[in-house]
Amino acid sequence: MASLDKEISYSNLKDLLAKGSGLLVDVRTKDEVDRGHISGSIHIPVENVESDMSLDAAEFQSKFGVVKPSLDSSELVFHCQMGKRGALATEKARNLGFKNARNYAGGYKEWSEKGGK
Image (cartoon, rainbow, N blue to C red; front, side, top):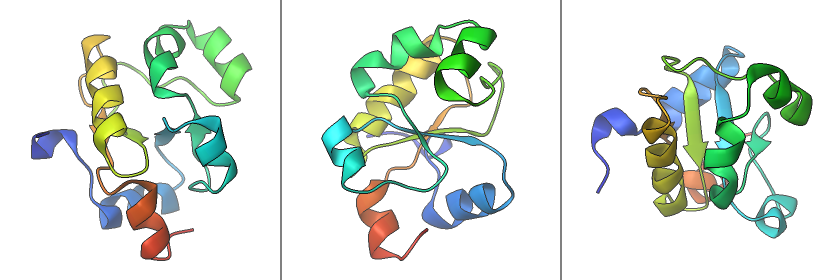
C-alpha cells in the first residue's frame, strides 16, 4: 500500500486544482477517459508514463499543451479509476526523479461520487 506522502486527498486535490496550479495526469485507458474525466487533467496511459514523462520540456509541451513539471514539483498528481494504476504511475514518475509525485488514490470514482468538477 502506498504511503501517505505519496497520496493526495480529494479535498487537497480540489484545492490544488482550484488554484490553477499542479498537473493532474489521468492514467486510465482512452475508453475510460472518453466516458468522463476530471477537468484540467491530461491523459497519459499508465503504460506510457515513463516515455512521456521522459520527454524534454519542449516535446512535452508540444504533445500535451502544458508545461512539463520540474523534478521537484510538489504539484504533480496521477490518478486512475480507483487508485492502483495511479500508484503504479506515481512510482514510475518517482523512479524518473519526480521525487514529490503523488497519487490521488480515490481516483475518478471518488471524484465523480463527491461531485468534483
